[in-house]
Image (cartoon, rainbow, N blue to C red; front, top):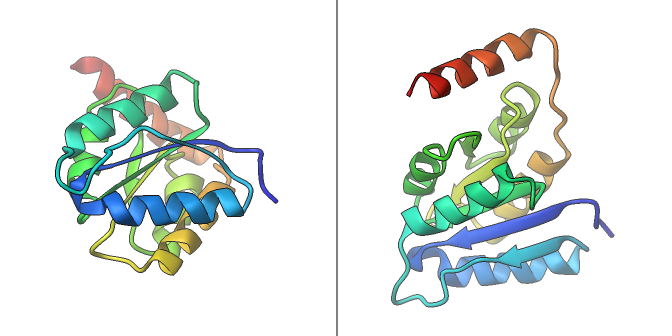
Amino acid sequence: MQTQFKLVIGCDLAAYDFKNLAIKELKARGYDVTDVGCWSALEGDYPQAAEEVASRVVSGEFDKGLLICGTGQGMAMSANKVKGARAALCYDIFPALMSREHNNSNVLCSGAWMVSLEKYLDIVEAWLFGKYSPGRHDVRINAMFDIENKR
């Protein structure tokens, strides 16, 4: 069972049921998962969840963040507004893995309307175990920080 990752997860109303199923499965696999909402399939907006998750990852309180909305687009856009967040929108394993290895992503965004629960869990696990490859990628990561710091 995996317990080395401390994860924080959030969703909007479109992904409420999906998130709850994902949490149950991730906990069954041994992950330490903290849910920050939303709390209903009737209300809950992606910008608030994205800011909460991304801020708590960037602060170091959590190792990684998971965000789910209908498509994942709004979550990724919102999370990337948080300084230090590198949110990746992924619907498949390979881009999730590359987002870790090449871009050192710290927040994974996906869509409840876009992937099955089984596929999502495979994506999460590939992403969690992807390792950042420093060296040539550091130049690009630092360039992202330079852009972020200009604002």
